[in-house]
Length: 434
Image (tube, one colour):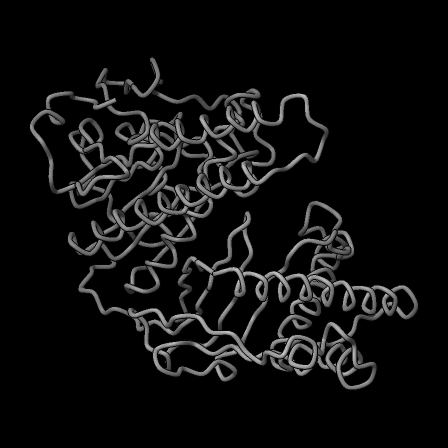
């Protein structure tokens, strides 16, 4: 399998000028490719292959932006254009067949700015601990340089790297390294399952059939996001639409780094628990397009939509693949209303039987009362019901999920070294740990 590592580049004045030039030329080359592809589509109804784009803009017309790059690099940039048009045709076919809800738009032009530059693994050489990135002949003729160098990361093998990407983002440049990662053979039991439900204050709630349950706290993350929105609103107050500044760039970049760090830390807590508890199956409750159609009010929508839960789900899935853990996502309709301990029926959204009613109810925020009057954590109840959604299909035994697991989950802070096994006495004193 392949993974991606992202390193921040701290360029001097000369290197920054080179990176700015390359990324701006990439944006212009992409627009040239889009223009040719759009005109061909309008006239013939067909789209160009990546080989056709390489030939037309490279060997035939000798596009000036194409010649600014090493040939492999220019071809990688144009390949991304061909892929975007292929995706458009696929989505258009899906829309006609009814599998895609919205009619896709033909790829449009970039409005200036900087674009991603991709170097293949065979193009970049390692010399004296530095990575040498080649440039095109035109750059050598114009500026008298044929390459630039960046330090080689000490935690990777050069032979394992398949692709290098120069990524411009909010006034910064990152070096993304796509490399082959070996699958880690962990001793896990596929019959042991961890069920995950996501939210806001409780970012993810996890319950297993091995007698463990924990919550990864999301209040700190929500507070950071709220503070970011307030500062952005203050800086943009009274300004024209589309206003942007270096201060907003720095603020946004800081916020995005924090979110990315939170995603990695939360995913790592989940995987570490699976490995230590020998859990071989992870079930994630997820409704497709829920962030686009949800209506919880302006303030709540902002918090819910901007927290990167989708990225967290993808990161957990990536780590599960690396550690040999089975990952399953399932729709989660009515899981928060139904009572797990009472075995309520779990209908699918839009297919609720007439007269259906849950035996228990949520009596206040975070607290659920079953038909027998037991008080359990509401998110843990929903989490266990997510497992019930696919238990029959996967052949899972959820008899190991008891009342105690649903009543006293361990609460973990994002930026701490706690694990579910490091249960403190103070956390267990609260029967529902709201």
